[in-house]
Length: 214
Length: 243
Image (cartoon, each protein chain N blue to C red):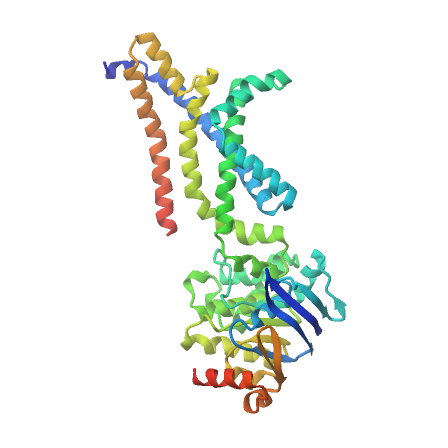
C-alpha cells in the first residue's frame, strides 16, 4: 500500500534522481534550442538542397519514438566506434530529437511575421541575413517563448526514457526504491509529485506568457 | 536619376498582372499612378525595386541595367525608398530606431551619427516628440510618417509610394499628404500610387492611368482629369469623383 514514510525516507535518493533529470533537461534543451534555430533557418532559407535535407531530418525525428534514438545512440553507435558515456549519449539523443520540434517552433514563428516586414527591410537594402537578424528574429522572440517553455516541460518528462539505458534519473531511482522496499506504489507516486513540481511552474509560466502576448 | 522601364511583365502563376508596361522618368519628376484595383499599379511599383521580381522586361536605373544578381538589386534598393500601404514599420523598434536602422545596418554608419540624422528626419515629418515611442503606441498617420522618414534616411534618389494613405483614418490622411507635398517641393523624385485627386493635381507632373495590366492613358493632371481621352479613364474618374 501507499506509504508517505517510504517517500520521506528515500527523499534524498529521489531528489538525486530529480537533479539528474533536471540537469539532463537543461543541457539537452540548450543544445536543442540552438540546433533547432539553426535547422529551422536552414530549412527556410538554406535553398532547395539544404531545405530538403533538413525537412527529411525533421520528419524522420518527428515520426520515430525518442526512445529509439536514445537506444541507437547509446547501444548502436558504439558498434561503429562512436562511444559516448551515459549522460552525453542521453543529452545528444534528446537534443537531436527536440531540435526537430524546436525547428518547427521557429519556423512557424518566422512565418507568422507579416511579409511586409521583410519587404520593408529589403526595400532599405538589407540582405536576407540582415533582415532576419534585425527585423524578423527579434519579433519572433516573444512568440517562441511560450511554445519553447512547453517543449521544456515535455522534455522534463521525456528524460524519463533514459531509464532504459540505466541512467539513474528520477524514474530509475523510484524503480530502485520499489525493488528494494517491495512497495512500488509509494516511490512512483513520489516521483510523480516531483515531476509535477518541476513541470507545473514551467507550464504556468508558458500560459502567462501567452496571455501577456495577446 | 533616370528610370527606364521597358516592356515590363509580371505574372503570378498563370495570372498576368502586368502585360507589358513601358515608361521613363527623369530626376525631380513626380509621377502619379492611378487605376482601378487589380489594374497592376501596386505590382508595378513593387517591381521597380524588385520586391516583386518582374517576369520579363528591363529596368534601367541611372543608366545601369538592373540584373537580378543579389548585390545589384541591394544597391538599387539603397537608392530607391519605398512607402507601403500597410506602413510596415518595425513594431519592436522605436520610431528613432526604425529610422536609424537602414543607415546603421546597410551603410554601417556610426550609431551617434545615424541617430542624430534620424532625429532630424523625425523632426521633418513632425514626430520629434514621438522618437522614443513604438509603433504600437502611434496612430496610422504617425506610423506612415515614421515609414517615410525611414525611407528618407537612406538618401534615396527615387521614392515609391504604394497607396500610402489607403489604410489611414480619413481625418489623418492630410498629415501624410502634407509630408509628401513637402518632399515634392524639395525636389524629390517620386512615383505615387494613389487615388487622392487633390494631391495628384497639386503635385504630379504626369499622371499614368492603368487598367488590366496596361497603361491606358498618360498626361498632365489637367489632361487626364479634365479631358480624359479613354472611356475607361472617364468611367473610373466619374466613380472616384463620386467617392
